[in-house]
Length: 411
Image (tube, rainbow, N blue to C red):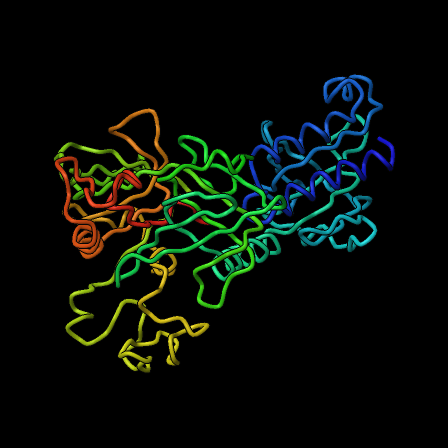
């Protein structure tokens, strides 16, 4: 492989790691592996047979054996392989998003860790590593968390109520009622759409403005107004989601599934939980209200104009926004996480998912337990439930509880 080709592979790999939110897609990762291998003459088997071609591949470190200097790596779309480090191995580290290989930092091979993303070059005809370029799991996690916080800070999410020209009107839920938001798009706005049965925000596929429909859940990021209700969008992610609810009847930790008796219909619904599903537990709102508190508001929080308490202890909370205009979806995302084996029969859950093939089985994107207060709020604000457990008060904006904005697109 020539130096020019190696740089091309590196840049493609970096683009896949950098992505930021929606760009870190599984499809891009598969493309990286294909591009890397495409530069090889005759492919991996030919390389071994001819004992000439240097092999390159992209993957994730899954195991390390210091005593034998062996590293187990799972290439993208290929079985795991075990490679050998040596005194001649050149190990370099790059920061997420860095595209210039000249800025790579030389590190010791002992600094490699499980979870690191790597671009590996092997010696011809062997499993010995000539060069390994590392993007550490720690650096990737920091980058991803920073990106997630940016989606919250500069983002707006809700249910699409209308489209007109270059503007999208969103309906958003707060504990004070319905709030309206506006997303303005331009020729520079990128659009991504969730595929059926997709769970990951990062796996959304390239789409366009015309594919957005009334009733879709949408999340936009860009220049945000001071009141937090308008965004000039740089990125838009959207999809058609379901909101289902019921009382837990069975928890199966071995199969990572729970079965609920669905609200309204009374039929059993199987909810599959994956590593990408987010499980949240709501606090006891009734006890908080009796104690004079509010969800997400400390007992000593200051009072904002109009008698509204401020979660930040100042007028209107962060950015001067009244608590009553708070984004319910962001509040839910900040709630403490729970685990599958902590769920108990009899607990009420609300779950968001994409619309899959089977009506009696879904894969959870976000699952919220101890959700009685959430269901009551949706019922009161939307005018009650129909016989399917679906709200009747939002004109079909979203199949679920009155367009209740249980997060389905979580960066």
